[in-house]
Image (cartoon, rainbow, N blue to C red; front, side, top):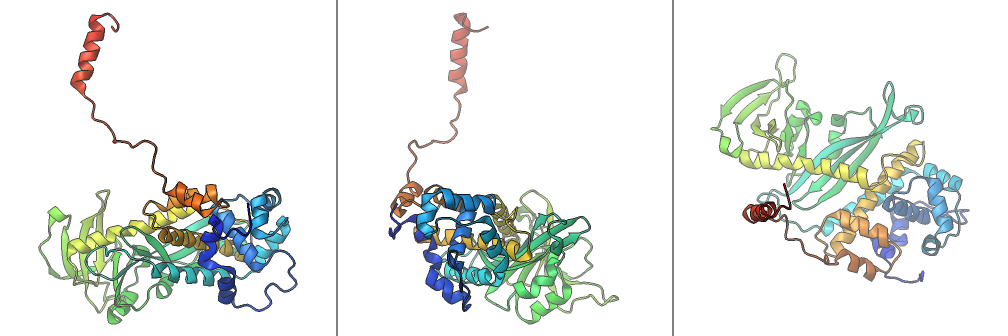
Length: 404
């Protein structure tokens, strides 16, 4: 393979963050001073490759560089030891990769052209967190419980009918509760609706949101105290069983809200009762229920990330190493979305990821041919069985003594 081939697949993928842009964004002087082989950008490229190929360890990554000509040609790197990779991963500040992630987020959103989920509600942000569990003996800095360690990714994503795009992330040891990060993840933006689960319930924050014209939809806890102010006639045929204007909290212990909220009772996809509260009085109860059902999008994103990127086991034991690896995983996801949007691919992102993994160092034309290749046979779906004709065949076989 010719290293100077501009249209290689890996080069097209990394166009989203080339070396010049990378250097401008990190804006750290002399970061590569005295470095002979493994520059910060080369290391960044290696980590992207390790995410795409879900490389097991830094030792295996070192062996890939040593054994595979494609790695050597792409990175202009003959060999690199495991210890060098480990030192680099642990010494670099996660702030570097966090900056890169936010740059790609803005770039991805600039190309986002998707129809609204319902009407013109503006952006729909979904907020949640996921925990990566770890061994307490190996990761003592991430104490979570008495016998367990973990790091938690608090994430805000933009959701459309087709796409889920990461928008803002916070990495902290898992002992930090979800609602402690609400101020960081929720912006004062009247053009957006913030959707989050009951782990973020905080009545004082809800009052602040009402004052600041921040629209939100969330699920109510079972033990919430409710004072009903008025009630609309529900519509069970649309799965709306309650539609009320309420005050939340208790006046005696000082938790009662000063602003009324809308309470809507509906059912989820599995038929379970869900009680939703919101300050979106301009939406119908049916629209509120429909919007809340999009909360599963972030759960699907976390599942995709854990299944198809390297975030369940870690290359290093230090906090820097773990955080760097998670930021790189998010960056890799954004790069794949950018590539998918640039080639106007409308299938699932997993198709892009699998094709990348197979043809990473091949020409970009080969990647496009494989990604858009039509199936050799077209399936007509599950065919309806002609029971009458089947019975006649079996009857004839019985009469001729072929079956008993």
